[in-house]
Image (tube, rainbow, N blue to C red):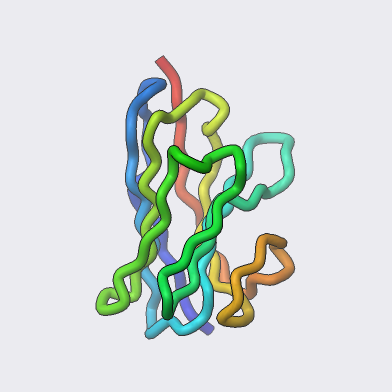
Length: 122
């Protein structure tokens, strides 16, 4: 079982940027994804990346503002978040998919990080 550790969350003003990191405890071959969960809401797909090709997929709510990337040598996946809005406030989770294919449902992922809080507020 791979261990995933997120970092990089915090408090940022609207329009600001943050970069989240997710370090894996071993070499990754499967797709990786980012999700978020706001209080009282279901966990929501944000972005995913094919580990071998680097091809991404984004939710419409973040397309054009967020960028997912990975560093194979560091077994780390990143989420660059720009033009942040108050509605982006949530706990952000990274996850490892069950296969190399990109999926968007939480049931398609079998390892999860502990989450990192992102708060967008003035």
